[in-house]
Image (cartoon, rainbow, N blue to C red; front, side, top):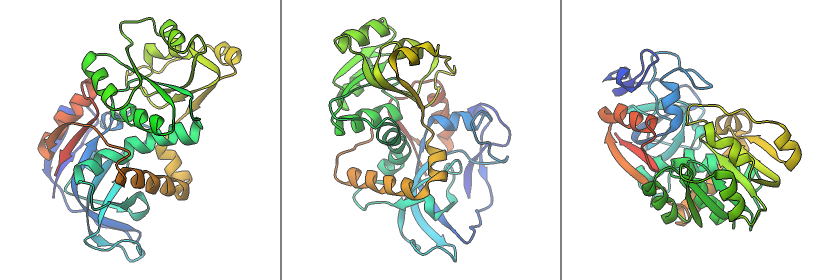
Length: 324
């Protein structure tokens, strides 16, 4: 089969597009013919050896995919050849076939395209887990989303609105903010052009923001935290800026606020039953048309390194899809 292969840690231009042996499934796995795979920010870290989990070289990046079951292991009872599935893996999706535990997949609804399915689960599950499970977001609360034009950010806008919250979206260009508004954000701010703390205070009548969802980190983190409400929740999702912020803990004391970690992968491993329920719930919402991923660009499998580079350069809006 053809695949994108990381033979040594490095940047996207070091990735190879070549033939590799077909994967062999274990008893609890299924073999999936991958039809589409999305690019997510962890892919940029995995190929550099900077992610929490390191792939055993050589490996194929790619975490969220959709495809057709080709073969099932002897212990697998819930899938058969021909079933269409959505899967989430740590890596392996940027290949024509992937062997994956059946528990890491859910059935793909017939009415959802392969592209939309591949664009959906990773980012929406991250945002839903953050807002629902970790922040316990309540109706009428205010959410500020940093990096709101990215896949996780746009998903967070939709989910927060669905949960009855008011959403303030932060991004770095007018084009990005336009998409945030189209996805339902109530207020959009360019955080490169305003004083973030005073602007967020003003927009909330000096009360502060109840929940901050931050996949960016860096220089935007502390001024955002300084604008948090009493007993607010600051959700640490990632560090796409490349800089891990350090907070003065007196801010937590003064606001009685929480800084809350959000790690979807660990949640899926430690509580697979609850994670599966969440995935199926999100798929139902998706099938009902209540969630709609924004696809920015499409690539062929051989062009996947270009897609990863676009993600690294922070030039993507929404989702990048590799069709296979």
